[in-house]
Length: 424
Image (cartoon, rainbow, N blue to C red; front, side):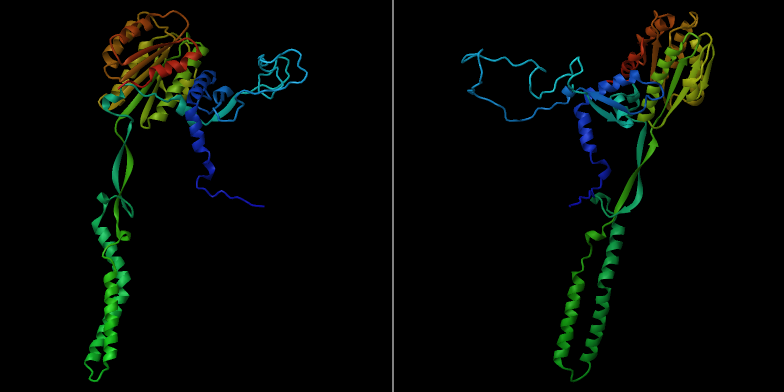
């Protein structure tokens, strides 16, 4: 019995190429399933992998096979209904006696076609989830990412391009090689030359002995001369490596209303939006800070866990969060050193007298400094004064976006609309 042992270097990931090819081929169906899965998921498992179901009809591929063609004459015994030239209708699907695959009948008999279930990993899920998204207006700083790479010297290597050759190191290696290959020959040559000189000074020395020594000396000289001055083995090249350096800094302010008007369902949708935002930012940008601000009548800077899960009650004064954001930005994130972004989630409820104050704060202190300010209003009610004030700002400033979320199914489309790539 023959035993086959797989010794390929990528033995643990032999299907990786086929897997990526499958994802690329059916990306539209997979992305649709991923976007549908976002709305079904809870807050705690939004960043896990996913089982994707693709209808079998969508993954069928054309194939070549030999079919029955041409005009054929057949004799069907027991025929009492048809005459020559009549055409026989094809039996309806599922009622024929063939082996075709049809849907299961209502009575439970037979076996229908199941959807093809394809499980994707967490990384693949997030890659499809955030594909074609970016932080808007970051191109003002001519940056694609918040990380640049600095080239630095990292020793020497045996391989490289001619432009990086190190002459001193190469000649030093060449000298060492030539010494190692010819030292013993030069020592023997010196001894033979000394012996030849002694024989030539002795009268009556046989000429054959002298000629033999001269032949040996000439052969040694030729061997020494054949040692190349420099060889590819001697070449040394300057080695360069890359290290990450922050080319710019970015901060994202997350503001959320946690007042009594925000019921638990509304808070869950806001949390889901911010978790999507958090995953997107931390996956795409390495050097980025996130500031969480919760507010009711008063605003407070909190950590990630308290921002998502703690409970608050009370009224709503949105301007308190905007003032705190501006204070934190002025103290810790100078606009000339940081790319500043902000996202706000609310149900639209606010004191009527406070909404003009919010507009004034945004127009005079925040919008001139931020790259992008996104506001989502999660409500099924009619829009109130806060929405109208923000909407009027959107007409005059291109770095603010206002979106409306009515139900959980709207979260992912709104998220993609807010952070879609801008046309160059």
